[in-house]
Image (cartoon, rainbow, N blue to C red; front, side):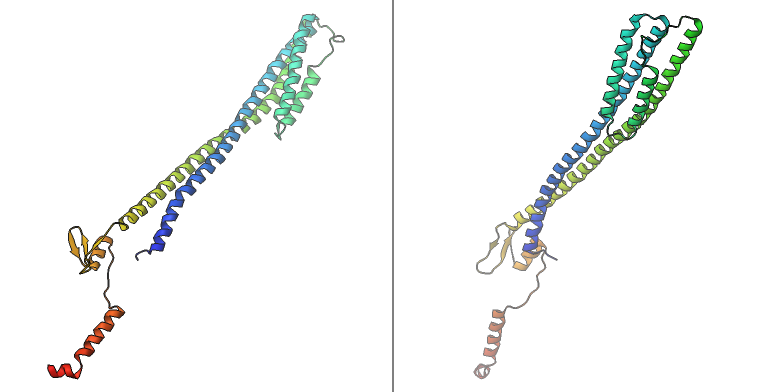
Amino acid sequence: MIPTQKTKRTLFWIGLSLPMVALIAMTWLVHQTGGQFNNSFNWVLHNYKVLDKFEQVQSHIVDAEANQRGFLLTGRSEYLDPYQSAMASIHDDLAELKNLTVNDPAQPANIAVLEQLITNELVFDPATAGQFQTNNSVVMLTARGKHKIEAMRHVLFQAREEQEHALSKHQQDAEADVVASQIMSLVLIGAVAVALVFVVVILLRLEKLQQFVTVCAWTGQVKFQGQWLRLDEFLERQYGISVSHSLSKDAAEKMMREIEELNRPQNRQKE
């Protein structure tokens, strides 16, 4: 079926609007996926920051316990300044960890357990602490220090495991966002390409239809590629349109008048 002019015009505007819609969709997609990727990327950085802070806490705990044990063994005040500095760093680290993990359902519990262990095992009053000079005291303090560190290290290990799991999840989300963005971009680029081809085809057909046609003023024949053709032949060659023949109202009336004229009695007598 040959499309009508209205149908062609409708298809033209549809083809012209498709690239615009696709471009708008691509802009929206880039904005959305960019926001999702930035969010996932920020979460990845956030998790790395939390993991780094746990490492710092563990390092400061080791320093605090070593200087505490040194003071208890020797009674020398030179161990107190490093001990107090390490304890201050631990408190700062814990405060920052609480802020970093305020929206994390699992880490506050781990931080609370760690904070309680630090209070029970590392906090002491130098003025009332006894001095241990015997070998048994040295062995006891060393074993006690090892037990403290292992208990706190266990809590820190569990906290890091949970944070690394969250980190892995956010990394996978970021990778999935990138892949989804690339797939959607390719789909939209393909849609734009198809729409542009569609528009070009329509424009070419319109240009072809708008070409000048030379028509004989006497016979009504059409000049096509150096030949004079009847209108039906021209339409079939140029546009593939099949033409059926009939009689117009004027032609039919003229034919009837001619037949009647021939059938009149006087015309018969002449014959």
